[in-house]
Structure formats: structure tokens, C-alpha cells
Length: 115
Length: 119
Image (cartoon, rainbow over all chains, first blue to last red; front, side, top):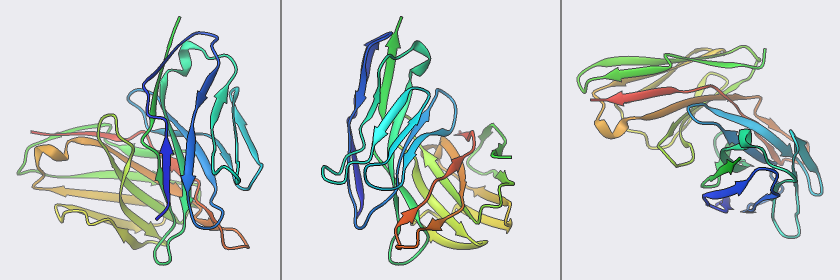
């Protein structure tokens, strides 16, 4: 079945450092890909998305490019801030033969940014 | 309105209690979801409703009973829960689109969750 493999962390960086969180996937067809962020005590928020190969999703300084050839969707940010401290989930949109569509999540990466 | 609301925010219940969690969205989405999330883990899908009909039940114990009264509301009825059911319960909704080529697009909007503690 479809799956997502994500760098588990935890990841600890200093403010203004460069961030990469790796995400690779296995899927039939061409799923849409997402990064969600979860701040402490909150639900998940969509950070960015890409719906087809070579699409680049971007939001709040974060970027990720849908790479079909490497089945990857790595999350990057050039200069992180303390407020970026959260758990980040990579996910893909999965359509089973029967039943409704669903999201398949990676295990999540806990990011801590120190001032 | 791009918000999914959930009530209550926190819930403490005993193992013999009956309680309900509520979820509401007014985005016209036709699919709604319940997830259970334990600490340091990704959300774990429990149920999916599509066009107000139960589409997926991920082998959830019968002490959890979902209900979809209309296209905007989703309930989760709880009865005789166990301490290991303590978790964050998340609701989500989506348009549940499929692209013309048949590929999947399932952007989900999540609520803030209900933090459930079973004593």
C-alpha cells in the first residue's frame, strides 16, 4: 500500500539556520503531497502542498518540490525562527480501490529552534 | 469560513461514562474524518464519512460510535472507554476531489482537537 517515510528527528537547530526535513513516498499513480505542521496543543495545519510532478509548494518561507523521479518531497527553509518549533508531518493523498480517499502520514519530525 | 470547530476542547471521563465529541464545518465539504492521536505519533484514522455515509471504519472498537447527522456535523459517541483511549481526537473535512486523470487529491482541514482523558 501507499506509504510515507520521513526523517524522524528530533531536529534541533539554532535560529537562522537552514532546515531540511526529508520525506520520501511509495504510491500507485500520482498522489498529491502535503506538509502539515502541528504546534503544541493544537490540531494540524496545512503548511504547503503540491499536486503534480515538479510543482513547488511554498508558504511562510518553507518550500517543497514534488520530485517524481526520486519520489521525494523534502521540506526546506532558508532561515528558521524560534516560532517554527513544532512537529512537521509529510502526507500523501491516497485513493484505495474501495472506500473514500484518505491521507497517509509520515511519522512526524519534531523541530526545536533555539534562540 | 475555512474553519473546523470541535467541542469540547478538553474532556475527562470515567470508564462507565457516556460522552460525545462534536465537530462542525461550513465549507461545504462532503467528507469528514475522525482521527486519534497519541503523543509523539501521527494521527491514526478511525472513521471516514463521505456524503453522510460511513465509508471507512478502520476496525475501531465498538465503544466508539460515529454519527453524521448532516453534511456539516460529525459526532463521536463514547461509552465504556479504557484508560488507553486517552488521546487527542481530531476531526477533519475535505472536498474529497479526484482529478480528471483519476489521481487523488485529499487536502484535509483539521480542527483543534479534543484532549480526552479516561480515568
